[in-house]
Image 1 (cartoon, rainbow, N blue to C red):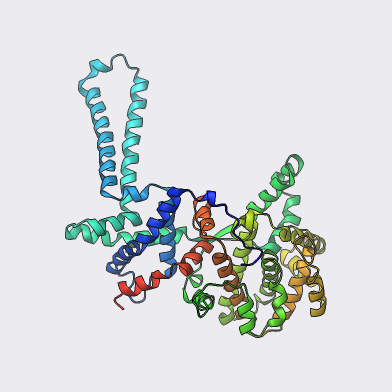
Image 2: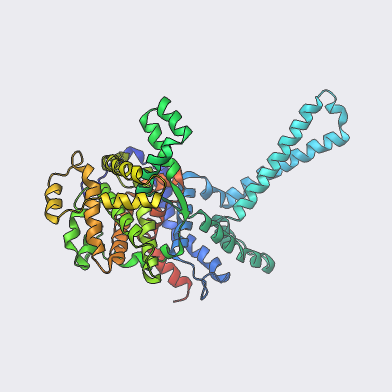
Amino acid sequence: MRPDHYDYLCYKEYPLPFKTRMRTYLRDTKNQVKSILQGLLESDKLGSGNHLTYFDIAVVELGFIFDVVYTKTPLIYTWKGCILRLISFTLSIGTLLFFIFQLSFGGLMLNKIEPRDVFLTMCMLVETVALDICAVLSNLCSDWGVIFMYDNCSAPKILQCALQYLPCFLSQQKERSACMGQFDLLDYCLDYCWNSRMDRVYRFLKKHCSDDILENYLRSKHKKPVEVPSYLKPKELYQSRLDSFFDSSNSFEATRGEKTLDELGQKDLEYSIKIHFDASVIVWHLATSICYHRDFENANDASNEAMKICKYLSDYMMYLLVMRPAMLLPDDCRSLSLDCALDKLTDLVSKASDKNASDKNAAVNSLLEDLPEISAETVMEDLSNVSAENGMENLPKYAGYLATKLNRNTNKWELIKAMWIEMLLYAAHSDQYINHVRQLGEYGREFISIIWVMGSYRVIQDVIEEACGK
Protein backbone atom coordinates (compact mmCIF):
# COMPACT_ATOMS: atom_id res chain seq x y z
CA MET A 1 0.00 0.00 0.00
CA ARG A 2 1.35 3.44 -0.91
CA PRO A 3 2.14 5.89 1.91
CA ASP A 4 -0.36 8.43 0.55
CA HIS A 5 -3.21 5.88 0.72
CA TYR A 6 -3.68 4.01 3.95
CA ASP A 7 -6.41 2.68 6.20
CA TYR A 8 -7.49 5.91 7.82
CA LEU A 9 -11.09 4.97 8.68
CA CYS A 10 -11.78 3.87 12.22
CA TYR A 11 -13.56 0.55 12.70
CA LYS A 12 -16.13 2.34 14.87
CA GLU A 13 -17.39 4.06 11.72
CA TYR A 14 -18.77 0.70 10.54
CA PRO A 15 -22.04 0.32 12.49
CA LEU A 16 -23.52 -3.14 12.71
CA PRO A 17 -26.71 -2.32 10.75
CA PHE A 18 -24.58 -0.95 7.91
CA LYS A 19 -22.39 -4.06 7.74
CA THR A 20 -25.43 -6.32 7.90
CA ARG A 21 -27.18 -4.43 5.13
CA MET A 22 -24.13 -4.44 2.86
CA ARG A 23 -23.51 -8.15 3.47
CA THR A 24 -27.13 -8.98 2.65
CA TYR A 25 -27.04 -6.71 -0.38
CA LEU A 26 -23.87 -8.20 -1.84
CA ARG A 27 -25.29 -11.70 -1.35
CA ASP A 28 -28.50 -10.90 -3.25
CA THR A 29 -27.13 -8.49 -5.86
CA LYS A 30 -26.72 -11.02 -8.65
CA ASN A 31 -30.42 -11.89 -8.62
CA GLN A 32 -31.36 -8.21 -8.50
CA VAL A 33 -29.23 -7.29 -11.51
CA LYS A 34 -30.49 -10.37 -13.33
CA SER A 35 -34.08 -9.21 -12.87
CA ILE A 36 -33.33 -5.78 -14.32
CA LEU A 37 -31.49 -7.32 -17.27
CA GLN A 38 -34.48 -9.56 -17.92
CA GLY A 39 -36.67 -6.48 -18.23
CA LEU A 40 -34.14 -4.76 -20.47
CA LEU A 41 -33.94 -7.83 -22.68
CA GLU A 42 -37.71 -7.99 -23.10
CA SER A 43 -37.78 -4.28 -23.92
CA ASP A 44 -35.04 -4.86 -26.55
CA LYS A 45 -32.57 -2.60 -24.75
CA LEU A 46 -29.84 -5.21 -25.29
CA GLY A 47 -30.69 -5.70 -28.94
CA SER A 48 -28.29 -5.06 -31.78
CA GLY A 49 -27.50 -1.41 -32.41
CA ASN A 50 -28.83 -0.32 -29.00
CA HIS A 51 -26.51 -1.90 -26.47
CA LEU A 52 -26.87 -1.36 -22.78
CA THR A 53 -23.43 -0.48 -21.48
CA TYR A 54 -21.67 -1.62 -18.35
CA PHE A 55 -21.72 2.05 -17.40
CA ASP A 56 -25.53 2.11 -17.30
CA ILE A 57 -25.60 -1.02 -15.14
CA ALA A 58 -23.03 0.49 -12.77
CA VAL A 59 -25.21 3.60 -12.37
CA VAL A 60 -28.16 1.38 -11.43
CA GLU A 61 -25.88 -0.55 -9.09
CA LEU A 62 -24.90 2.62 -7.21
CA GLY A 63 -28.58 3.41 -6.85
CA PHE A 64 -29.09 0.01 -5.21
CA ILE A 65 -26.19 0.63 -2.82
CA PHE A 66 -27.58 4.02 -1.83
CA ASP A 67 -31.04 2.57 -1.18
CA VAL A 68 -29.67 -0.28 0.91
CA VAL A 69 -27.44 1.90 3.08
CA TYR A 70 -29.41 5.12 3.44
CA THR A 71 -33.09 4.23 3.02
CA LYS A 72 -35.70 1.66 4.04
CA THR A 73 -36.09 0.50 0.45
CA PRO A 74 -35.22 -3.18 1.15
CA LEU A 75 -38.19 -3.26 3.52
CA ILE A 76 -40.55 -1.37 1.22
CA TYR A 77 -40.20 -3.85 -1.64
CA THR A 78 -41.35 -6.87 0.32
CA TRP A 79 -44.85 -8.18 0.92
CA LYS A 80 -44.67 -6.74 4.42
CA GLY A 81 -43.72 -3.35 3.03
CA CYS A 82 -46.50 -3.49 0.44
CA ILE A 83 -49.06 -4.26 3.15
CA LEU A 84 -47.84 -1.36 5.28
CA ARG A 85 -47.94 0.97 2.27
CA LEU A 86 -51.49 -0.20 1.47
CA ILE A 87 -52.61 0.42 5.06
CA SER A 88 -51.09 3.92 5.03
CA PHE A 89 -52.67 4.79 1.68
CA THR A 90 -56.06 3.41 2.74
CA LEU A 91 -56.07 5.40 5.97
CA SER A 92 -55.18 8.61 4.11
CA ILE A 93 -57.97 8.09 1.57
CA GLY A 94 -60.42 7.09 4.31
CA THR A 95 -59.66 10.18 6.39
CA LEU A 96 -60.11 12.46 3.39
CA LEU A 97 -63.42 10.84 2.40
CA PHE A 98 -64.69 10.98 6.00
CA PHE A 99 -63.85 14.68 6.22
CA ILE A 100 -65.62 15.38 2.91
CA PHE A 101 -68.65 13.41 4.12
CA GLN A 102 -68.78 15.48 7.32
CA LEU A 103 -68.59 18.68 5.32
CA SER A 104 -71.41 17.57 3.05
CA PHE A 105 -73.81 15.79 5.42
CA GLY A 106 -72.58 16.44 8.94
CA GLY A 107 -72.46 20.21 9.01
CA LEU A 108 -73.77 20.39 12.59
CA MET A 109 -70.55 18.77 13.83
CA LEU A 110 -68.46 21.50 12.20
CA ASN A 111 -70.42 24.54 13.38
CA LYS A 112 -67.86 25.34 16.05
CA ILE A 113 -64.89 25.12 13.68
CA GLU A 114 -63.60 28.21 11.92
CA PRO A 115 -63.87 28.11 8.09
CA ARG A 116 -60.19 28.92 7.89
CA ASP A 117 -59.35 25.81 9.94
CA VAL A 118 -61.64 23.69 7.77
CA PHE A 119 -59.88 24.95 4.65
CA LEU A 120 -56.41 24.29 6.07
CA THR A 121 -57.42 20.79 7.20
CA MET A 122 -58.77 20.00 3.74
CA CYS A 123 -55.57 21.24 2.11
CA MET A 124 -53.40 19.09 4.38
CA LEU A 125 -55.51 15.98 3.77
CA VAL A 126 -55.43 16.49 -0.01
CA GLU A 127 -51.67 17.04 0.16
CA THR A 128 -51.24 13.84 2.21
CA VAL A 129 -53.17 11.79 -0.34
CA ALA A 130 -51.27 13.39 -3.23
CA LEU A 131 -47.93 12.59 -1.58
CA ASP A 132 -49.02 8.98 -1.00
CA ILE A 133 -50.00 8.67 -4.67
CA CYS A 134 -46.64 10.14 -5.75
CA ALA A 135 -44.84 7.73 -3.41
CA VAL A 136 -46.68 4.73 -4.88
CA LEU A 137 -45.95 5.83 -8.46
CA SER A 138 -42.31 6.51 -7.56
CA ASN A 139 -41.99 3.04 -6.04
CA LEU A 140 -43.55 1.41 -9.10
CA CYS A 141 -41.25 3.32 -11.49
CA SER A 142 -38.03 2.56 -9.60
CA ASP A 143 -35.48 -0.18 -10.20
CA TRP A 144 -36.64 -1.98 -7.08
CA GLY A 145 -40.25 -1.78 -8.27
CA VAL A 146 -39.39 -3.44 -11.56
CA ILE A 147 -37.50 -6.17 -9.71
CA PHE A 148 -40.36 -6.80 -7.29
CA MET A 149 -43.01 -6.93 -10.02
CA TYR A 150 -41.00 -9.25 -12.25
CA ASP A 151 -40.18 -11.58 -9.37
CA ASN A 152 -43.53 -11.66 -7.58
CA CYS A 153 -46.28 -10.52 -9.90
CA SER A 154 -48.02 -12.97 -12.23
CA ALA A 155 -49.75 -10.12 -14.03
CA PRO A 156 -51.96 -10.24 -17.13
CA LYS A 157 -50.38 -9.72 -20.52
CA ILE A 158 -51.51 -6.09 -20.69
CA LEU A 159 -49.71 -5.25 -17.43
CA GLN A 160 -46.64 -7.23 -18.49
CA CYS A 161 -46.46 -5.21 -21.71
CA ALA A 162 -46.68 -2.01 -19.66
CA LEU A 163 -43.87 -3.20 -17.39
CA GLN A 164 -41.60 -3.71 -20.39
CA TYR A 165 -41.45 0.06 -20.96
CA LEU A 166 -40.44 0.87 -17.38
CA PRO A 167 -36.75 -0.11 -17.86
CA CYS A 168 -36.51 2.21 -20.88
CA PHE A 169 -37.87 5.06 -18.77
CA LEU A 170 -35.51 4.16 -15.95
CA SER A 171 -32.51 4.08 -18.26
CA GLN A 172 -33.27 7.62 -19.46
CA GLN A 173 -33.52 8.80 -15.86
CA LYS A 174 -30.18 7.22 -14.95
CA GLU A 175 -28.44 8.79 -17.94
CA ARG A 176 -29.54 12.23 -16.79
CA SER A 177 -28.17 11.54 -13.32
CA ALA A 178 -24.71 10.47 -14.55
CA CYS A 179 -22.63 13.65 -14.52
CA MET A 180 -19.00 14.45 -13.86
CA GLY A 181 -17.59 17.67 -12.46
CA GLN A 182 -14.99 19.68 -14.36
CA PHE A 183 -12.36 22.06 -12.99
CA ASP A 184 -9.69 23.65 -15.18
CA LEU A 185 -6.87 24.99 -13.04
CA LEU A 186 -5.59 27.42 -15.68
CA ASP A 187 -9.05 28.85 -16.33
CA TYR A 188 -9.60 29.17 -12.60
CA CYS A 189 -6.40 31.18 -12.16
CA LEU A 190 -7.32 33.43 -15.09
CA ASP A 191 -10.81 34.01 -13.71
CA TYR A 192 -9.30 34.68 -10.30
CA CYS A 193 -7.06 37.40 -11.72
CA TRP A 194 -9.74 39.07 -13.87
CA ASN A 195 -13.22 38.40 -12.50
CA SER A 196 -12.26 38.89 -8.85
CA ARG A 197 -11.58 42.52 -9.65
CA MET A 198 -15.18 43.04 -10.85
CA ASP A 199 -17.12 40.50 -8.76
CA ARG A 200 -19.08 42.33 -6.06
CA VAL A 201 -19.67 39.16 -4.05
CA TYR A 202 -15.94 38.45 -4.11
CA ARG A 203 -15.10 41.93 -2.88
CA PHE A 204 -17.68 41.64 -0.09
CA LEU A 205 -16.36 38.24 1.03
CA LYS A 206 -12.78 39.47 0.87
CA LYS A 207 -13.67 42.36 3.15
CA HIS A 208 -15.83 40.53 5.70
CA CYS A 209 -14.99 36.80 5.54
CA SER A 210 -12.02 34.52 6.01
CA ASP A 211 -9.74 33.34 3.22
CA ASP A 212 -11.16 29.81 3.37
CA ILE A 213 -14.69 31.05 2.68
CA LEU A 214 -13.36 33.20 -0.15
CA GLU A 215 -11.53 30.27 -1.75
CA ASN A 216 -14.56 27.98 -1.42
CA TYR A 217 -16.72 30.61 -3.12
CA LEU A 218 -14.34 30.99 -6.05
CA ARG A 219 -13.87 27.24 -6.47
CA SER A 220 -17.57 26.42 -6.27
CA LYS A 221 -18.29 29.20 -8.74
CA HIS A 222 -15.81 27.78 -11.24
CA LYS A 223 -16.78 24.10 -11.09
CA LYS A 224 -19.12 22.92 -13.85
CA PRO A 225 -20.87 19.53 -14.02
CA VAL A 226 -21.29 18.01 -17.48
CA GLU A 227 -23.05 14.90 -18.67
CA VAL A 228 -20.69 11.97 -19.08
CA PRO A 229 -19.86 11.74 -22.81
CA SER A 230 -20.68 8.52 -24.62
CA TYR A 231 -17.01 7.86 -25.45
CA LEU A 232 -16.16 7.69 -21.73
CA LYS A 233 -18.70 4.94 -21.03
CA PRO A 234 -17.43 1.83 -22.90
CA LYS A 235 -16.02 -0.79 -20.57
CA GLU A 236 -13.27 -1.60 -23.10
CA LEU A 237 -11.75 1.82 -22.42
CA TYR A 238 -10.82 0.70 -18.89
CA GLN A 239 -10.82 -3.10 -19.04
CA SER A 240 -7.36 -3.70 -20.50
CA ARG A 241 -5.70 -1.54 -17.87
CA LEU A 242 -7.86 -2.98 -15.10
CA ASP A 243 -6.90 -6.53 -16.08
CA SER A 244 -3.23 -5.59 -15.79
CA PHE A 245 -3.81 -4.77 -12.11
CA PHE A 246 -4.28 -8.49 -11.41
CA ASP A 247 -1.12 -10.59 -11.30
CA SER A 248 -0.75 -14.33 -11.87
CA SER A 249 -2.01 -15.10 -8.35
CA ASN A 250 -5.12 -12.94 -9.00
CA SER A 251 -4.13 -10.48 -6.28
CA PHE A 252 -4.95 -6.83 -6.94
CA GLU A 253 -2.26 -4.15 -7.10
CA ALA A 254 -3.18 -0.78 -8.62
CA THR A 255 -0.57 1.41 -10.28
CA ARG A 256 -0.87 5.07 -11.12
CA GLY A 257 1.04 5.29 -14.39
CA GLU A 258 4.03 2.98 -14.08
CA LYS A 259 2.58 0.32 -16.39
CA THR A 260 1.67 2.83 -19.10
CA LEU A 261 5.10 4.47 -19.13
CA ASP A 262 6.79 1.07 -19.11
CA GLU A 263 4.70 -0.30 -22.00
CA LEU A 264 5.14 2.83 -24.14
CA GLY A 265 8.85 3.19 -23.41
CA GLN A 266 8.56 6.53 -21.62
CA LYS A 267 10.46 5.78 -18.43
CA ASP A 268 12.10 9.20 -18.62
CA LEU A 269 8.72 10.62 -17.51
CA GLU A 270 8.58 8.58 -14.32
CA TYR A 271 9.52 11.66 -12.30
CA SER A 272 5.91 12.85 -12.72
CA ILE A 273 4.52 9.87 -10.79
CA LYS A 274 7.23 9.44 -8.16
CA ILE A 275 5.87 12.37 -6.18
CA HIS A 276 2.74 12.49 -4.03
CA PHE A 277 -0.42 11.51 -5.86
CA ASP A 278 -2.07 14.93 -5.58
CA ALA A 279 1.09 16.59 -6.93
CA SER A 280 1.18 14.07 -9.77
CA VAL A 281 -2.43 14.93 -10.66
CA ILE A 282 -1.59 18.64 -10.75
CA VAL A 283 1.49 18.13 -12.95
CA TRP A 284 -0.35 15.96 -15.47
CA HIS A 285 -3.38 18.26 -15.42
CA LEU A 286 -1.31 21.33 -16.24
CA ALA A 287 0.65 19.45 -18.90
CA THR A 288 -2.59 18.21 -20.47
CA SER A 289 -4.00 21.75 -20.51
CA ILE A 290 -0.85 23.07 -22.17
CA CYS A 291 -0.90 20.40 -24.87
CA TYR A 292 -4.64 20.83 -25.37
CA HIS A 293 -4.42 24.60 -25.91
CA ARG A 294 -1.54 24.17 -28.35
CA ASP A 295 -3.12 21.39 -30.44
CA PHE A 296 -6.85 22.13 -30.26
CA GLU A 297 -7.15 24.23 -33.43
CA ASN A 298 -5.02 21.90 -35.58
CA ALA A 299 -6.44 18.58 -34.35
CA ASN A 300 -7.85 16.09 -36.86
CA ASP A 301 -10.85 13.83 -36.28
CA ALA A 302 -8.72 10.91 -35.10
CA SER A 303 -6.86 12.84 -32.43
CA ASN A 304 -9.82 15.07 -31.55
CA GLU A 305 -11.67 12.34 -29.64
CA ALA A 306 -8.52 11.34 -27.76
CA MET A 307 -7.95 14.99 -26.88
CA LYS A 308 -11.50 15.32 -25.55
CA ILE A 309 -11.15 12.17 -23.46
CA CYS A 310 -7.91 13.48 -21.98
CA LYS A 311 -9.43 16.88 -21.29
CA TYR A 312 -12.53 15.45 -19.60
CA LEU A 313 -10.54 13.06 -17.41
CA SER A 314 -7.92 15.69 -16.57
CA ASP A 315 -10.51 18.27 -15.51
CA TYR A 316 -12.45 15.64 -13.57
CA MET A 317 -9.42 14.50 -11.57
CA MET A 318 -8.66 18.14 -10.75
CA TYR A 319 -12.31 18.60 -9.76
CA LEU A 320 -11.95 15.72 -7.30
CA LEU A 321 -8.76 17.20 -5.89
CA VAL A 322 -10.32 20.65 -5.43
CA MET A 323 -13.93 19.85 -4.47
CA ARG A 324 -13.83 16.21 -3.28
CA PRO A 325 -10.33 15.73 -1.78
CA ALA A 326 -11.51 12.81 0.38
CA MET A 327 -11.82 10.72 -2.78
CA LEU A 328 -8.10 11.14 -3.54
CA LEU A 329 -6.40 12.00 -0.25
CA PRO A 330 -6.43 10.33 3.18
CA ASP A 331 -7.91 11.93 6.29
CA ASP A 332 -9.99 14.31 4.17
CA CYS A 333 -7.01 16.65 4.24
CA ARG A 334 -6.55 19.63 2.00
CA SER A 335 -3.92 19.40 -0.68
CA LEU A 336 -0.84 21.39 0.26
CA SER A 337 0.44 20.76 -3.26
CA LEU A 338 -2.67 22.43 -4.69
CA ASP A 339 -2.24 25.53 -2.53
CA CYS A 340 1.41 25.90 -3.53
CA ALA A 341 0.64 25.37 -7.21
CA LEU A 342 -2.21 27.89 -7.10
CA ASP A 343 0.03 30.55 -5.57
CA LYS A 344 2.69 30.04 -8.24
CA LEU A 345 0.18 29.88 -11.09
CA THR A 346 -1.60 32.99 -9.86
CA ASP A 347 1.67 34.92 -10.01
CA LEU A 348 2.34 33.71 -13.55
CA VAL A 349 -1.21 34.48 -14.68
CA SER A 350 -1.10 37.95 -13.14
CA LYS A 351 1.89 38.81 -15.33
CA ALA A 352 0.18 37.32 -18.38
CA SER A 353 -3.11 39.10 -17.71
CA ASP A 354 -1.34 42.45 -17.41
CA LYS A 355 -0.01 41.93 -20.93
CA ASN A 356 -3.26 40.71 -22.49
CA ALA A 357 -6.08 41.72 -20.19
CA SER A 358 -8.64 41.95 -23.01
CA ASP A 359 -8.06 38.54 -24.61
CA LYS A 360 -8.27 35.40 -22.50
CA ASN A 361 -6.77 33.13 -25.17
CA ALA A 362 -3.85 35.49 -25.62
CA ALA A 363 -3.29 35.48 -21.88
CA VAL A 364 -3.29 31.67 -21.85
CA ASN A 365 -0.71 31.59 -24.65
CA SER A 366 1.38 34.15 -22.81
CA LEU A 367 1.16 32.06 -19.65
CA LEU A 368 2.27 28.94 -21.50
CA GLU A 369 5.23 30.79 -22.96
CA ASP A 370 6.24 31.95 -19.49
CA LEU A 371 6.49 28.38 -18.21
CA PRO A 372 10.21 27.57 -18.27
CA GLU A 373 11.65 24.60 -20.12
CA ILE A 374 14.24 22.80 -18.01
CA SER A 375 16.46 19.78 -18.39
CA ALA A 376 15.77 16.31 -17.07
CA GLU A 377 18.77 16.57 -14.76
CA THR A 378 17.37 19.72 -13.15
CA VAL A 379 13.98 18.09 -12.66
CA MET A 380 15.42 14.98 -11.04
CA GLU A 381 17.65 17.11 -8.80
CA ASP A 382 14.66 19.17 -7.66
CA LEU A 383 12.58 16.05 -7.10
CA SER A 384 15.17 14.64 -4.73
CA ASN A 385 14.30 17.49 -2.33
CA VAL A 386 10.53 17.48 -2.84
CA SER A 387 8.34 16.55 0.12
CA ALA A 388 4.83 17.29 1.32
CA GLU A 389 6.14 20.51 2.90
CA ASN A 390 8.82 21.69 0.45
CA GLY A 391 9.25 22.03 -3.28
CA MET A 392 5.59 21.92 -4.29
CA GLU A 393 5.73 25.49 -5.62
CA ASN A 394 7.76 24.12 -8.55
CA LEU A 395 4.89 21.97 -9.85
CA PRO A 396 4.10 24.38 -12.75
CA LYS A 397 7.77 24.13 -13.76
CA TYR A 398 7.57 20.33 -13.75
CA ALA A 399 4.37 20.55 -15.81
CA GLY A 400 6.10 22.78 -18.35
CA TYR A 401 8.92 20.27 -18.70
CA LEU A 402 6.44 17.40 -19.02
CA ALA A 403 4.44 19.24 -21.70
CA THR A 404 7.63 19.90 -23.65
CA LYS A 405 8.54 16.21 -23.58
CA LEU A 406 5.00 15.19 -24.56
CA ASN A 407 4.91 17.56 -27.53
CA ARG A 408 7.89 15.72 -29.00
CA ASN A 409 5.95 12.46 -28.92
CA THR A 410 4.00 11.74 -32.11
CA ASN A 411 1.53 9.57 -30.18
CA LYS A 412 1.22 11.86 -27.19
CA TRP A 413 -2.59 11.87 -26.89
CA GLU A 414 -2.77 8.10 -26.64
CA LEU A 415 -0.06 8.29 -23.98
CA ILE A 416 -1.90 11.00 -22.03
CA LYS A 417 -5.19 9.11 -22.33
CA ALA A 418 -3.64 5.89 -21.04
CA MET A 419 -2.04 7.76 -18.16
CA TRP A 420 -5.29 9.39 -17.07
CA ILE A 421 -7.20 6.12 -17.28
CA GLU A 422 -4.61 4.38 -15.13
CA MET A 423 -4.59 7.23 -12.60
CA LEU A 424 -8.40 7.24 -12.49
CA LEU A 425 -8.53 3.49 -11.89
CA TYR A 426 -5.82 3.81 -9.26
CA ALA A 427 -7.80 6.48 -7.43
CA ALA A 428 -11.05 4.51 -7.72
CA HIS A 429 -9.65 1.23 -6.42
CA SER A 430 -7.14 2.54 -3.89
CA ASP A 431 -9.96 4.29 -2.06
CA GLN A 432 -11.90 2.15 0.39
CA TYR A 433 -15.42 1.15 -0.58
CA ILE A 434 -16.78 2.80 2.57
CA ASN A 435 -15.59 6.15 1.23
CA HIS A 436 -17.43 5.64 -2.06
CA VAL A 437 -20.58 4.81 -0.11
CA ARG A 438 -20.14 7.87 2.10
CA GLN A 439 -19.68 10.19 -0.88
CA LEU A 440 -22.71 8.57 -2.50
CA GLY A 441 -24.84 9.67 0.43
CA GLU A 442 -23.47 13.22 0.46
CA TYR A 443 -23.14 14.11 -3.23
CA GLY A 444 -24.84 11.39 -5.25
CA ARG A 445 -23.31 9.30 -8.01
CA GLU A 446 -19.72 10.32 -8.68
CA PHE A 447 -18.09 9.24 -11.93
CA ILE A 448 -15.17 7.72 -10.01
CA SER A 449 -17.60 5.58 -7.99
CA ILE A 450 -19.20 4.36 -11.22
CA ILE A 451 -15.75 3.35 -12.45
CA TRP A 452 -15.17 1.60 -9.11
CA VAL A 453 -18.35 -0.43 -9.56
CA MET A 454 -17.47 -1.27 -13.18
CA GLY A 455 -14.10 -2.61 -12.08
CA SER A 456 -14.78 -4.23 -8.73
CA TYR A 457 -18.13 -5.85 -9.37
CA ARG A 458 -16.93 -8.37 -11.94
CA VAL A 459 -20.00 -10.60 -11.72
CA ILE A 460 -21.81 -8.13 -13.99
CA GLN A 461 -20.09 -9.65 -17.01
CA ASP A 462 -21.30 -13.15 -16.12
CA VAL A 463 -24.82 -11.87 -15.55
CA ILE A 464 -24.96 -10.10 -18.91
CA GLU A 465 -23.60 -13.10 -20.79
CA GLU A 466 -26.11 -15.35 -19.05
CA ALA A 467 -28.96 -12.91 -19.73
CA CYS A 468 -27.98 -12.62 -23.39
CA GLY A 469 -27.91 -16.41 -23.70
CA LYS A 470 -24.20 -16.68 -24.49
